[in-house]
Length: 177
Ligand SMILES: O=c1[nH]c(=O)c2ncn([C@@H]3O[C@H](COP(=O)(O)OP(=O)(O)OP(=O)(O)O)[C@@H](O)[C@H]3O)c2[nH]1
Ligand SMILES: [Mg+2]
Image (cartoon, rainbow, N blue to C red; front, side, top):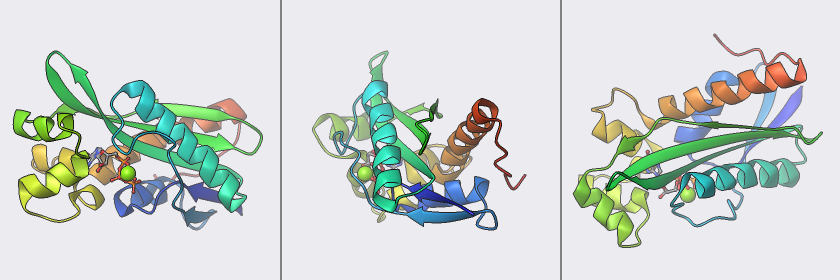
């Protein structure tokens, strides 16, 4: 079975990979690696770079066949601060596929905390009075009344990665669908 290194131990992200790459067909290894970008990425480019770096660092650290990186960030547009999310899948032959995910604007009071230099995850815990939102429904889950939680948002990205990888390498990923 192929080994897939996942460049995080955050359950919201790990569960998204597990939903697409089933443990029946793959050895899945969540592992903490650096994104080599800021803890709070502040543009699409920086967030995508973080995802690619995580995928490459995870593949290398775990000597895997495939590395997957998922990164959240924020983007300023139209005088609002938007949550953005990017993913990358790399393989040991050098194939790199990327995909972007859903984005929503943050309420001004939350955006201000991030603009003041805090990580969105920390601002979310302060804003909600809950703990580790980032590992559960996420900001996207809170502000969509759980219509879309963080794991579901990342499942969409991982499916985009798996499908592109299949198409580009004529391989078959065997999603659970
Ligand atoms: O509660 C959240 N809901 C979201 O929808 C969301 N999108 C981004 N972020 C935050 O942006 C920073 C970098 O994101 P991030 O990719 O590093 O995530 P993370 O730190 O939660 O996981 P990880 O670094 O352990 O993999 C972290 O402060 C994240 O908390 C979110 N937090
Ligand atoms: Mg982080």
